Image (cartoon, rainbow, N blue to C red; front, side, top):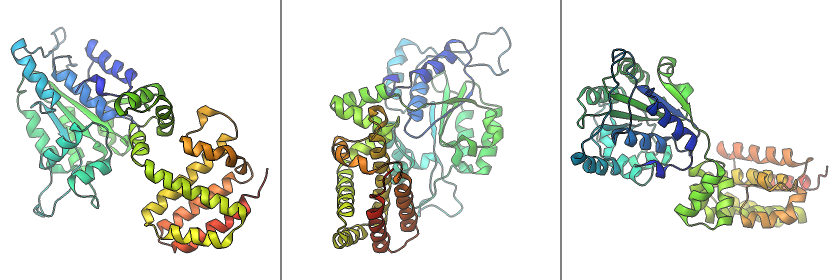
Length: 395
């Protein structure tokens, strides 16, 4: 994998490269940032750069002052083979650590390790380094479990990194979501970070760094990764997904800097269209005060599964916000598809300063009630009846 597979993040890439060029690369880095910003993609691309012969690392006191810092420059005879291994993410000096689950086939005393799910991880990351924890849970087949990094993993990692580099250069350990380490594992990992094996670089990829032990956070160099800039997102959507300029622009604004949200918006297009129809139907019937038809709308909503009901209510909240903002005629602040915008042209004026907060609170209460297994027919019919009065409110 190379830098071209990372979407945007040129500033973060430049900072990483600067650390290498100035021979200030620490033995432990932590990339922190929101989901979908490309932290794992950056980590993997940087690891491949290091393993491909591009870098030097700080001695951290292990190399005498004045002595040249080590670097890995593979001979031409092995460079091609090295690059093939990196392209396939099968380099023997590249180690991945990630949260795992305990399968029914495992002994009750067994502590799962990353190698138990190496095939599933490799298949997932080779499809692209942009995925969620839910994607990983599905790949492991444990959607209903809690994934953690066990003490067994720390023991396995200590053993791997104690071995000599197979290619004569770096050993790179990428730890995805280190905040999921249990306490015993974190304490063991702390020891190896404090006294790392020679030519070893740790790259942690974290979304919730505050959950890590303070002693670990204090021993890594933190680099905060920002959301993907709109221009890079726009370009990637056109080049990688074949979208038109207008569609790419709309999706990039909806995504708000997250490639995962952009993909979710593309993949859930049909459901969003259904939700838009439900939203339009509710608003039209409420405006016309057609109580009987609102009752049928509520019954139809109640027939869906609770997870889908919750997704609709979240969509409802977003549409209320977008229609309110639409009134200000600030295109850069609106995040709507073409169909949503077409409806907003005539409807947005009904969402104003007097009712935008009460309507949002109404939907959030419904979301809470559905989450607590309240009767869906009652929840949605009550919501529909209150919408009749709320749409009449004027600033």
